[in-house]
Length: 314
Image (cartoon, rainbow, N blue to C red; front, side):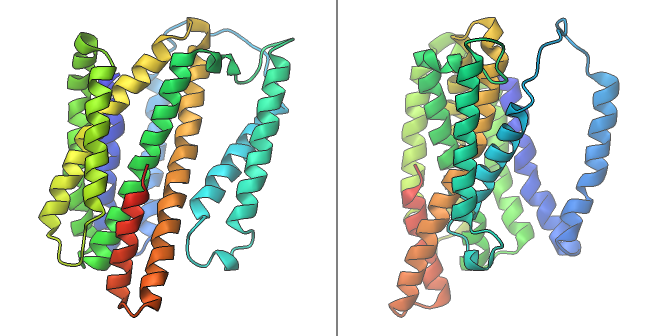
């Protein structure tokens, strides 16, 4: 699990830097064109290199559950991501409506899974939630992702719009934090084997909360080097939380529920990340507008909004 955390953390750490280079070279369309060869290589290597470790077994698929899950979770994540953004009134469908529709469809999906559990094999077995330790780990993971994405979404805005850094310099400034989180993954995995989850999660949560609190004091004159230090410290706190929470949560499930537990964690991570983004952007926009109405200039108003947004991250 520590090695998996390394890959998951290091790859996004390189994303902002690569995006910064592409934006310096051309338009935003390059961001999507650059992904095409990567996606093609993934398909080719996946086809040739990946093998089935266990024995694949045919199982029934409840086809009505598929569109409910796809459209429901998709609409929920998309709607939450749009809440608090600018020009939402001009959107073809308001984010609040999309969020409501997604929540209703996810509710229908959950209801159908509960009904299928009585007679056949559900697409997603919600009996995983009856394991208290897994449910607690799931809640902690969701809060962590809300804090992670809520805090990290504000940093590029702050560095570019308030401090005045270019997209490339912003991306380079964010690399050390992601690399730190990734490289700590295997070491945290070893510590988990020796110390267990609580002795790692509690210090990690305290460090994360302290860093988010300090982000709330960022101003127009704050040195980018201080932001770099805080970002690295925040990444250390997250590293001490993710691997232990994820591993300990899945460890209590019986083997036949592993895939369902993993699917629930993966799905709710995305929902939590979107909810965290919606929360901090809404708070930032509201307080920035209030500061601007009070006479602050554009940069000062945005800095005020970012401080409040950082304070609101879970």
